[in-house]
Image 1 (tube, rainbow, N blue to C red):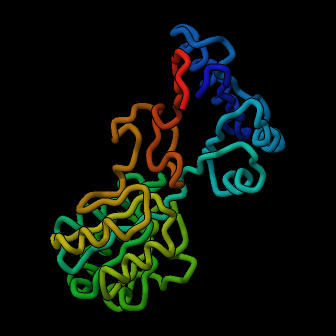
Image 2 (cartoon, one colour):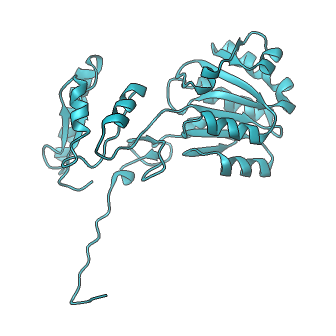
Image 3 (tube, one colour):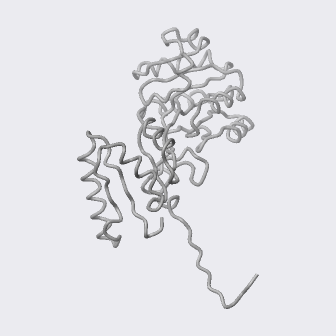
Length: 280
């Protein structure tokens, strides 16, 4: 950002207000000790959402807004902002287990993607399984997930293989649970998996488990998401894990930044040109 601009952070809801005050003071003090001008980091000490809306229209002072919060906050930003903004989070992520998957590998990946930390945006919310391996994989995988406390919302074919799962609804395919809940669906092909993900996904993180090079390439090219994985957990989508240092967020937009964002993604470019009478 240009040096003339400042970093403003709304104070947040009542339950986090005091914490945010202490965090803001600590960051501002550390920045000042390292040569950052005083006042460059500020907290808007208000619980009133109208303060957020007011900030979102401060085009003369703010270069960009980065909403960090739930769906309600993001909706407020989308409906009210006149300053540029980067939408982050909202991870309805999927793991697709292909017909050519190493099922032992798939089991580890699915379990990690769902159970390791279910409350974050890069946790998997839906498991897609190719019909050719469904009979072998679904009872084993869903049994393991159930033992870990995961609530299961499954399609009719999946429930035939694991009757303990609840019937899935249309809403389940659309939901970012942020909890120990997972939707499960049997698909006929990699193309159907891609179609499902592009319809219901939020452009965050998607994964395929497959030993078939052509299927992996097809999935990686066709799935529209900031991070697409082959034979790895969606849980790796993180600024720190990617080596970006402090993470500002995970952008689900395409421009100007996409995926995990560090300081580089928030730095603008200024061109300095010296001349001596040159013309074009």
